[in-house]
Length: 125
Image 1 (cartoon, helix red, strand yellow):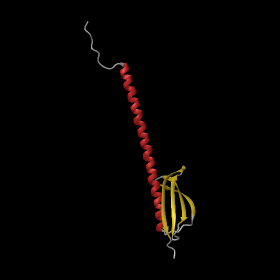
Image 2: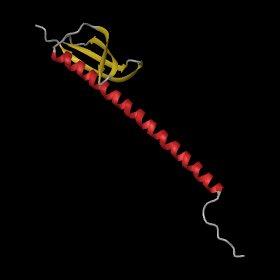
Image 3: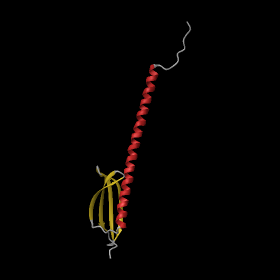
């Protein structure tokens, strides 16, 4: 009886290959989830920076001279709800006011997405 030559993989080899493939697939899935979360956070940070810059530019365009103190307002940009915290302080030069803006997500007020500091000039006569 002639000897038959076996071709193909054994069951053990197939199981090992499947185990390796499943670990690799899980790693790819984890990387894609982390990438999506990172992209979402970067989008939120970008919108927060734009919101802070828009607010400061609006104050400058209106030649506003806000009173000293702290204020908060809820804003929305690009479908993302945020809280803009404004702190107005005096400076050594009485013709300038320091404005510090912090922007955070509406549901995570303790985590600041953006911070912007600017100065306003007193244009009053």
